[in-house]
Amino acid sequence: MGRRVDQPTYEIVGPLTRFDERDSVFARERLRPGSPLERAYHALHPELKEIDRRLARFIETVDEPGERGEQLNTALYQCSFGPVAGLALPDIVDGPVAERRVHVPPDLAARRIKAIARHLDADEVRIGPLNPAWVYSHRGTPPFFDYYRPNPPHFAGLPDGYSGLRWGDPIELPHTTAISMAFAQDRRLLRTSGTPFSDFEVGRVYAHSALVATQVAAYIRALGWSARAHHMRHYDVLVVPVAVDAGLGELGRCGYLINQRLGANPRLVCVTTDMPLALDKPVDLGLQDFCRKCLKCATTCPVQAIPRGEPVVVRGVRKWKIDEVKCLLYWGHLGTACAICQTVCPWSKPPTLPHRLVAEIAAHIPAARRFLIWADDVVYGREFRPAPPPRWGSETIE
Ligand code: SF4
Ligand code: SF4
Image (cartoon, rainbow, N blue to C red; front, side, top):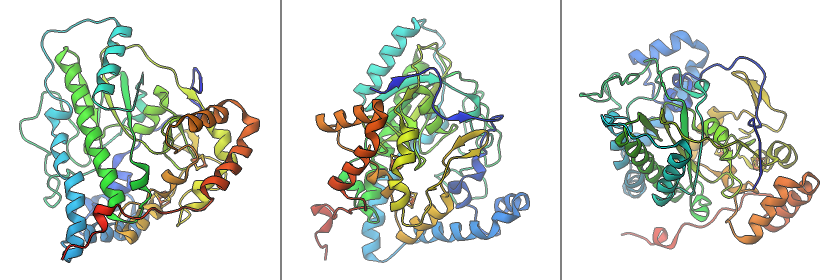
């Protein structure tokens, strides 16, 4: 395992500023041109108007019903991403807390929660402090259930104290601790990048991890402590830095968390709570040095959305910053998510004994890193090698 350290490996160089979810590309792509929200947002950010219209055109084409072949693809998308939308209900992500509180020693409670999460299928679980700087300042992503009504409340019958349900609502989260969980995606299906099968796998893992996050949150609430699940249908926090603080991995050049065993491959969810839990330490995998020498994600990204230079300061943190507009527009061009950077990363390998050994060497022996990067290129290629669709997906349907 990488070295356990007292501080995460990203560098804080100024006051940390909370991220406004309205500024995320996934919120901006949903701004319908001419709608009240779009006008309100672009009155504040006129410089983003044109680019956001391009993002909105992408999402409109995704939402349109297509030809028969496209319908087969849309059906796959709906199958994996659709039903899980119900897991974003406020009383599922949050909800009532049992009146009677069970007091458990923090180390025992942490062990029990990790065991439950693993039994529910989380591949990696760690617990860290919740830095308030990683909580979104304002709600930005519209409800997944009702895109087309202007800024509806998510639901009626909200639990007491629940806020931040409409676009632009401030978000306050009083929790102190975060349980971060990582779920592996099938590498082969992800390598069908640009086909609906890659998206299908992404959606499958998003859905499964969302369910587990809500289950873990429900467990903690049933013990009498407040707990909220954060998953792809309802984030209040930036799950990557939260996971870095818990020691699940380090932030890579490609913008994803890199975990020693799962590489850039996992999907992340977390549960925040006020329950006292023993905290894990962050990890140092030597990744900041490794990424400086590697650049494989940056050179294989089809639209140069991943920087090749040095990290820059973003809201008080020095880090590599990807161009998410370029990335999302490329997804629009493909009609699916891309995921090339996740699959080419040398850390994204099956956790076989030889690969685990190589990851150990990479984490602990800086002098070996250039050789390992060269060896990865020789064995797996410097370029992205797409995988063919699965057999069940290539059979013709008349
Ligand atoms: S997902 Fe694709 S387009 Fe986006 S940064 Fe990664 S490689 Fe580039
Ligand atoms: S591909 Fe290389 S540079 Fe990119 S995140 Fe992985 S290790 Fe870092």
